[in-house]
Length: 221
Image 1 (spheres, rainbow, N blue to C red):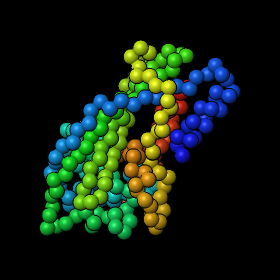
Image 2 (cartoon, rainbow, N blue to C red):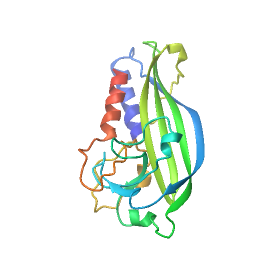
Image 3 (tube, helix red, strand yellow):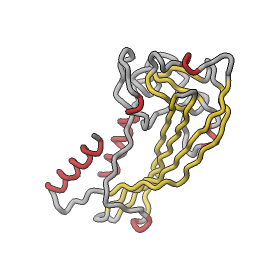
Image 4 (tube, rainbow, N blue to C red):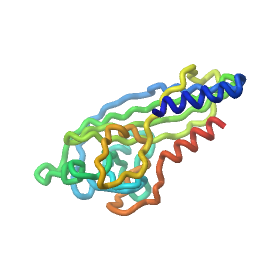
């Protein structure tokens, strides 16, 4: 759906002005690491939080992520970086993760750092971004977290160019009805805003979707 919308916009722009080229977007994996880490799974580290979402999401605080990642994967005051696994609902609750008889678990944390280049051959410009993705399976549940950061402009010759406009990563979903059952597999590649230790209520719907759209618009302007 995202690819269809983006390509349709590109075709429309081309039909309005043949001189206007659609900026190319290319992603290159910079590093891909998997690290074995022992994590604590208890009432303090496993929680339902509404921070940066419109509903409560299942999240786990993992302090060791601070050593494994380049970007900051936590919110101010959260106490530690985190990963998320979709909305809190039956079958996807802290009680499904926490086991008092086994308070820790050794997991394999995958960290993927991607360099993203947006190049404009007509304007001879290049903008570079860092996208960092964290994936880990904890007691049979897939958790994810993503951050993005602009790295600034570079000479056009330094840009990794591409003639293909890629499909953007799926973004944070619209506010979820806590009573509905959501397939988190459809939104697992979300650019999450962080994992505050707030266990209830709303954090003002600071959705990364808005930030990502604004970022893309500024880059295309």
